Length: 286
Image 1 (spheres, rainbow, N blue to C red):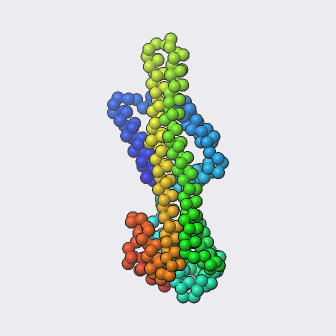
Image 2: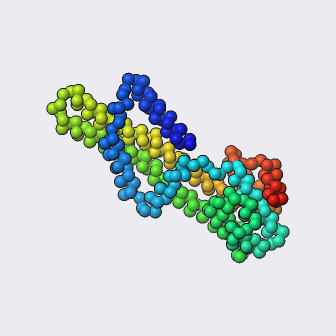
Image 3: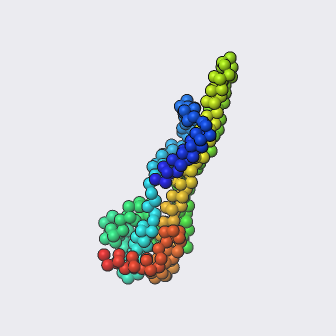
């Protein structure tokens, strides 16, 4: 929603200023200039990226128009889930969570937290390391190193669409110049026309530069920033899991381990100690 509002503000500001200065919006409607700019950008996008990168970018684009799911309610669910799982481990032993880890969709513990259960990456990350705890003899240091490598891989994969959109935005002004040069070439070959008609052709050519810069910095470029922020939010979720699980491995009680996880959250989504404690108590009684 904010993206749509931002686009409307950009368009209203640019076109409004142009009209107030005496310009005519109809002059800016140059479909052939748009064809050159957008068509070249799409072609460069296809040439400069692998099929895997193109697929990842196209998959990421629809998420731009969805509100973030990583809010305080989701983090409270996550930490309540972690507390309940770790408390069961502490009380009944690691083998007691084997079925929960292998079949989280059928687990009565995971079923209490639908927001987390619906996040495939978070569930996979959590269950994988709980499974290592159950079936292996890895120490906390080894698991931490493995977690860091997986988080880094996830971050690198998420950066692919960000980098592609950013490069595409950077290229649009150049394609605008290409469109403008093509317009100037057309003007030069029509040099025998009256000055008034030549002026119109030059104006049409300059629109190409205008559209390339406007599309780059007003419409496409900002999308890369949004994608990067969403990536940071998704990474924060697994960082919270990592810190909590490691704290438990190092011998801290579930309540204290969850507190470790709470501390790594952004201040805008981090629940207070009392809020989390109350939520955990309510979840245990369900």
